[in-house]
Image (cartoon, rainbow, N blue to C red):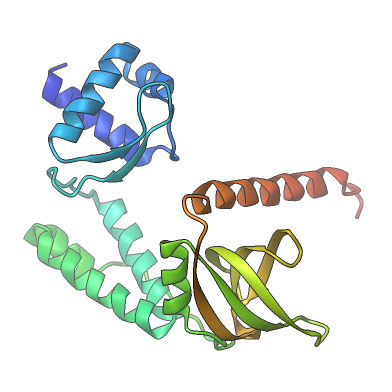
Length: 239
């Protein structure tokens, strides 16, 4: 394998891996030594790739926009169209508009035959039940997550009890009927889920919790997975 082909293979492996990825895992997948992985990552950085991490630690691919883009096969195009159409149906207005722009940009960057397939994709998404409107601005909430700053808001739980919360916002997840904020709650000193339609009076602070958001969110998702696994294993087979 040529060095150029190996660099592209390494970039593809990092794109597909769940970050952060261990250098040992990359070396095993590609059949090369650890020293080669370290050298190749330095080469990718010199070509413009933004890769977080260093030798002895895990790596995260942050940005590779300066490298030649990957092509898409037909199934990948259908998946992209379906995902963006789903966002158009279920996202808040700013996200729905962003999805429409993304589809237009994608069409303009594809070869004519694939642009035609994108325009006439066979998959679509429709929802006939509207979700409850969020009580706060989702765009401001997303920006607080990216900026990794704490927020405060008024909240009404399912029993009607009203509280004031201060949290570190980690992510937003879309369930079947509602959107929920995943956060670390300062009041409870634990991870909590808050429905966006029950939140009011959002205040974005300047209190940073960087760079904790990604590892905290990873820990929270692992806890959710473990709780679900434990619950499934303790259910009676006749229940």
